[in-house]
Length: 436
Image (cartoon, rainbow, N blue to C red; front, top):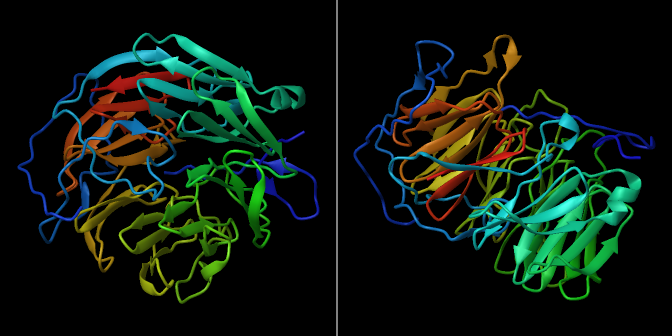
């Protein structure tokens, strides 16, 4: 019934288009190499590893310990900051998650973790809760509507309180009891969801693939308010959930539209379109895949259409912009931003101005095949990236220098996530790797 996520106006067919290419106090630390055992491989395109060396001292905030990853990008602001891990990482264990790679398209809905339990979906139409200590399934919930249509695509999962919230490509939203996996309520819509839900202040916010945002009552599932954006002919699989701070909810549509709403009633606070302005884009894909990120009163919006836009969250006034294309999450810490662009450059830029501090070019092909990079994750003075060839790469946030690298025998396809001092990596073969 559903065979993809490109929407062609007035044509009832879908086709997947995947462009998976890849705090307030200053913090300094003397760099130490963290060496992991394993096969060593080149990760740069040439001997000229650094495209631009650091011309000033990079300041980042001290690492902070977190005890859960309850939603995509960890928190409601989508702000990936400096997390705390062990100085020397090593493989702790592997856990088999089963058949989770959607139709071999190198896409896995991002899992969530709380209280040493991972919640995820598989291709047999189940939402599962599995113990990270024993590797045993605690419960699994069959999505019968998805099974009846033979369409297992999941937009994403979020945790809030004692509940699990799930969006699906079939247009369903589920609220599931986190303790026993029993259905609390199900809402059906005539639209697709390929992004995870955001749960905040007794509301569930979801964005459909045809550019509608819905605010649902968390207790009943009833629709409280909605908004419709412009339809876009071409968009990219997946995407980021909305971001929110205070009463301001910010959403991005595949049309390139950016809306800030009052989350209470859905009234528009301000609006912009990433296609406007003076930055020239060579692509006709306007989709915004990277997570829009809120830090303090600033909104950062990386786009696929060669623009990084930075706004005042309160009024939508643009602070600065930069010609940069990305579908990866950004890290913001101290005075800098770390982001991987679609050409494989890992870039460190100044947070206030967008000026380049340093950049390194990662290898994008191996044996004639494309390498897909996921990340970065900033963890105890290490920028962690993982590749579709099984490489775990650790770089210095201060210079871009390689600190360590190790190659596993499986293919990583999700961004690394972290809980407490452990880093979790997922392969398309269905293995959860736990580093600690």
